[in-house]
Length: 315
Ligand SMILES: NC(=O)C1=CN([C@@H]2O[C@H](COP(=O)(O)OP(=O)(O)OC[C@H]3O[C@@H](n4cnc5c(N)ncnc54)[C@H](O)[C@@H]3O)[C@@H](O)[C@H]2O)C=CC1
Ligand SMILES: O=C([O-])C1=[NH+]CCC1
Image (cartoon, rainbow, N blue to C red):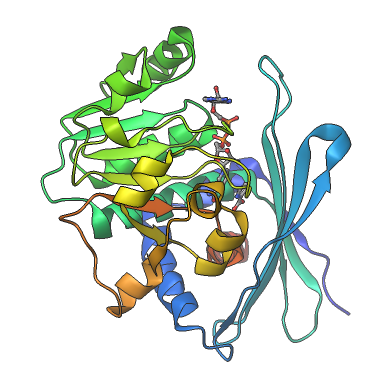
C-alpha cells in the first residue's frame, strides 16, 4: 500500500527552494518543452474554470516528464481583487504523484513555488534577451511577484539603480523600505521606466499600464501579469515594436490579452533560444510574455520533494 503523502508547507518550501538550484533546472525544462517531444514532456495549456461570483479563476496545470519520472499538477486560483481587498490575489497548491502507481507522493504549498519559479523564468528571459551592461531595472507593481522578481534580479545581475512604481506612493515606499538594497520609489510609470534597460510588469491591471513611447529602444520587458485573453499590461505600440518571446506559444495565444488583442506575433519561446533554434535579439526591444507553465511547477516541486526526502532520511 502506498505511504501517505508528505505535506510540505510554506515555511519548508521557502527553506528548500533556492534560485541557484532552480534556475538551471528550469532552463533544461524550458528547452525540453520547446522540443515538443511527447515521449519526453507533456504539458497541455492550462485548463481554466471561471469563478464568476468571486471574479476569479481556477487554473489546473498538469505536467508529465517521463524520463525524469515527474508527474504533477498545480491548482491555482487567481482573482481580480477590488482595491482595498484584503483577500489574496493568488493561492496555489502543487500535488506531486508517482507516475507508475498513480498515488500522491506530496502535497505542497504552491505560493512560494509560483512566486519563485515565475521570477526565475523572468530572470532567465533577461539572461537571454537583455542587453549586456544593463544598469537600470524598473519594477511595476509591489506585490508578491514584485518581491520575488526583485530578489532574483538583484541576485543575478548588477543593476546600478532599481526603481519601483505602485499606484500609490505609500505602497512604492513600503516596498522600498522592505528590501535590503537601494530602491527608488517612483510616483509615475513614466518616471520608473524612462531609460530603464529592464522592465518587469507584475501588476493585477487589466488595461495597459506600460506604454511603448516611454520604453527605451533595446530594453527588455518581462511581462508577468495580465494572464487572461482580455487583460492587458502593455500597449499596442510596445507589443508591435518589440520582438515578442513567450514561455509557451500555445499558452500565449490562448491566454495573453497583450498578444491576442494587439495582434503581435510570438517570435519564439524561451526554450527555442535555449535550444539554439531561434535567435536572441538582444540588440532590439524585447518582450517576454510570461503566462506560467505546469512544467515550471513540476521541476520546482521535484526539487522541493527531493530535498525534503534527503532531510527526512537523515532523521
Ligand atoms: N506569469 C505567471 O506565471 C504568473 C503571473 N501572475 C500574475 O502576476 C500578477 C502579480 O501577481 P502577485 O504579485 O501575486 O499579485 P499581488 O496582488 O501580490 O500584487 C499585485 C500588484 O498589482 C497592483 N495592482 C493591482 N491592480 C492594479 C491596477 N489596476 N493597476 C496597476 N497596479 C495594480 C497591486 O497594488 C500590487 O502591487 C497578477 O496579475 C498575477 O495573476 C501570478 C503568478 C504567476
Ligand atoms: O502560472 C501561474 O501559476 C499563474 N499564471 C497566472 C496566474 C497564476
